[in-house]
Amino acid sequence: ETVHASRLAGDRRHRFVIISATAAWLEANFSESAAALHPLLRNMEVPQHTGLLRSMSLAERDLCESLLQPPVQRVLRPAWFRGKALECFAVFGGLPKSAGPDHDPVRQRIDSATQWLRDHFRQDLDLLMVAKHVGCAPHYLSRLFKQHTGKTLSQKLREIRIDRAATLLRQGSYNVTEAAFEVGYNSLSHFTKAFVAEKSVRPSDWRAG
Image (cartoon, rainbow, N blue to C red; front, side):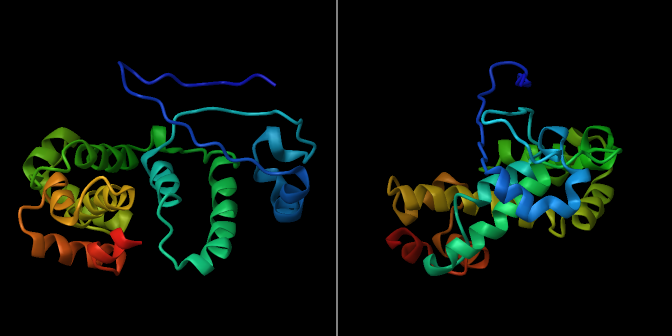
């Protein structure tokens, strides 16, 4: 089969997520909803090497990044990953909605705001700056973001910062204080409080493993 890829603009780096499954697993889990799957998977007679590459939305990227840091105890991870495998194939293996994210102005604004937070996560939140970047009024952006993500912009920024800090701590390349400053916190107590709110564990315990 032909593999289709999207090239990002400029010199942005490409990262890939590869998800594989046997035809038997697909049939066991999606036989009743096969009509909603991508044509490459719909007939359950998948060639040995088949793929379709495209750019991920920010929501899809968040899903993939969650796989790097399972929020459950180690003994529960097999069950957690099985559930995530089903979610991934439903998201990536399904046909897109007729009004997909590329054509949804609301989703575009949310994605644009989220990307701004990712690009400036070390800075304090500047609602006026984010709203100017997105192209709408600050109060409207705040309400829209909360309505469609379930989080405020401040909460999303905290999530991005703490996810980054958690990766640094788990890799062992930073101690707690260094990680706090690296992701934009000037107060260790505020960093610890934010970390516990996101991960339900103190950063020192997370680093220990």
